[in-house]
Image (cartoon, rainbow, N blue to C red):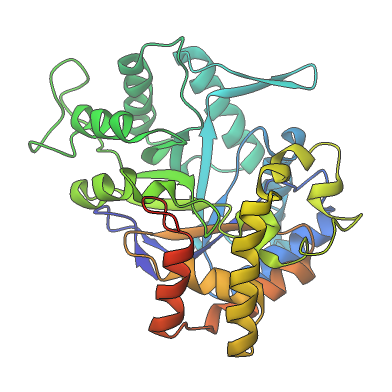
Amino acid sequence: MRRLGNTGLRVSALGLGTLTWGRDTLDDECAAQLKAFLEAGGNVIDTSPTYGEGQAQQVLGALISRGDSRVASRDDLVIVSKSGVLRRDNHSFVEASRSAMLGSLEASLRELGTDYVDLWMLQVPDEHTNFDAVLSTLVAAWQSGKARFVGLSNHNAWQIAYAAARLGNTFGGGLAGISAATPGLAAVTNEYSLLNRQIEVEILPATSTLGIGVLGWSALGRGVLSGKYRSSTPPDSRGASLHLQGFVKPYLTSEKRRVVESVATAASGLGESTLAVSLAWVLSRPGLSSAIVGARTAEQLHQVLRGLDTKLPRQVSSALDEVTDPINPL
């Protein structure tokens, strides 16, 4: 277990994402995933009202609230949920007004069958809503006890630093205009893998300095670092699905393929899988609290869990650092 920044909250190095739950991943597969994840020592579950076309949280809620047949106890989980994106008529749009966010939080609690989430985050920046107003909404949720900790997802470094100052991570307390009692910015969530290391340029230095936890989503490069796309796009993969092919496509370029081939070469030399080497690399990164991975099937998750014991020799890790350096690319 690791600590989430300076909060003291204990989180597993690996977090389980639920992007496909309720849509591509059937309920029985979701149950099998959660059971295997908990048995492997995991506790971080990343979800959102928009995941699984609005079904993911309902599926998760059923798995933790169905009496003696439940898969997990609420106390065994660190549930990360988000607000700020709404779904209407099968379309998603950004909406971080106070009423929309608090209404979304209430709906999440009902779906999850719980009276609080461990970490509640603004899912994406909303350029049409005053940022201080958004931060005051996070404070309100924390003060109500419905969010134990609050954070930001997919924000840039200046937004994170500003929020940290306003919410009390610096100067020993929140700045004037937000609240006399502030929760601090507990964590941020940003994409992080060998295929996307931009977080290292400004965000990780900021979070490390400010004592903010970091959850890295899509730790296997949107599935591309599993190695399954090396020769073609499997027909049953995310890259072939109508609703997720646009999500995967940016990582199927010739530049990204060169990175995957470098990882595959390293994996072959170590007698490991491309997936295991990619996961080992991201789990070893300083400043990362938890790496979030999502799986469509329980078998895919088992492959990830088997890779948790992989350790990279220093020279291999250094070589992968060089070929993927976000500041000085080769």
